[in-house]
Length: 332
Image (cartoon, rainbow, N blue to C red):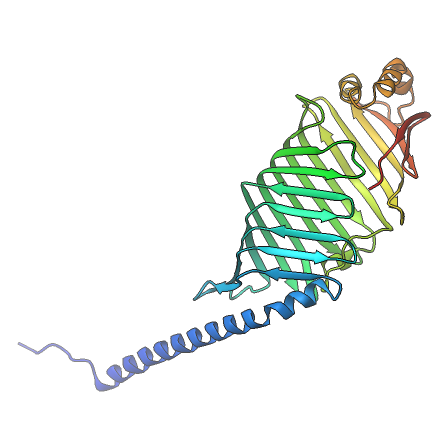
């Protein structure tokens, strides 16, 4: 009976060399990964300083790079930002991020709340159940970014507000991207509730706009949004229910004193229901609009649909709807 075939010496040597190559590659990868992680942690303060610029500061407390072997991710216990020149501060909870080694420019992250933001005359506290973010980095900053938050709440107070304002939403997602020299932004909210009008809730909120010449807000160093600036509102809509909504669109200018001038187009569906919303804020205006409802309908610039479209003008914060003055907006 023939004896079993034995591996040839050359096959054994090939196997040994293959195993050695795999082991050497693993050791080289491990050494490189931990070397890169150590260098990243050492250079992080300088990188943050470059991102926020000379007039601001940022800190990632207890920074740690994790994700071995195939990811790189920055972990921080807290994040903070301060810009004394603009009177801005922001602080939030822990950050956990990750990027695949083969796509280092695409970073996904999760951030713990709350976020506490203060500006001159304004204080905002935001908290959430889950907040996730995704960004695409390029050589001079970000090309685009998105966030998605669930069960989110806002608590807003400031010198220009008549009272503290609270807002809750089941979900909010926001997006920003460069568009040549401009910055496109969008935000969407589901099931919004507020503290100003009891029982009033919005089924959905939409903001789609372009900030003219503000693509540098995604560049390094970061340039905060300061006045004056121009924007185009492509669509700002509040849907109260399936049949009731308010939508505005048009160009907006905010001057050095944070006063607004705009030529907008207002589209209203179910005017009577919306008047019920206006009444708690300004009963006189609501009564005026209710009394001239048929006249308002006759001024519809886009007849033939189920909505009323009217010119909404703002001049140095003074608001008028067609020929009817509505009052003055608080300064931003």
